[in-house]
Length: 290
Image (cartoon, rainbow, N blue to C red):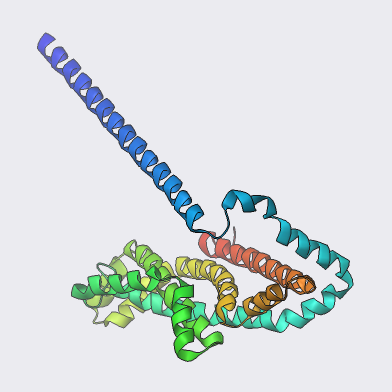
């Protein structure tokens, strides 16, 4: 009995010592990573400061000069705000259309890519790495980079913005969709396969009903992101309200009331769609009774 007790105590002590050693290693690794992050941040800031036309600290007191100028001029011309809102409302509709079309196209492509790259569901299992790397490439490049290339080829307008956002959306949603599909129950798929269903029928009837709520939830969330992205792409000539905002800001003093009206439209639109999509996402994920 004494030997058993001694052996048990030694086992407890060895386990505790191993745990403490592992904890110390993790803390050491964390400290090293934190020190490396701080070093890179400081050296990066110094490099940017040295190569910038104006110093960061010298320009810091002027940080709020532009917002103050916009607010002051917009308040002085507050009577023009309703007319300015109506003036830029068609451009806002164009931005929403860009986001909606690109989200639908990107979600469809992401759905196909996700099913082709999910283990246990893929039509061609050997090509799973190919489809996964394709999605990696699609989401590796920011929308603005893709849009700049397409604008150079196709010219300015909403089409380059739609393609750019759709490509990035397909890569991002494809990754999310694939992770959801990996957790799907395979029993319905096996049952459909046993009665002779083809791959498309197995996916449509056996997998899609399980993952549809999460797919729709992610798609709505991506739509919010794409509204912001389509507005930003307007700055590089991709059309929409972002293009009008760039022009209003370029005019400078005397036209800041136009920029203020566009900011108000963007803010109200993003808040509206954020609340709307959040409401429907909650209903889809938690159920209509939630």
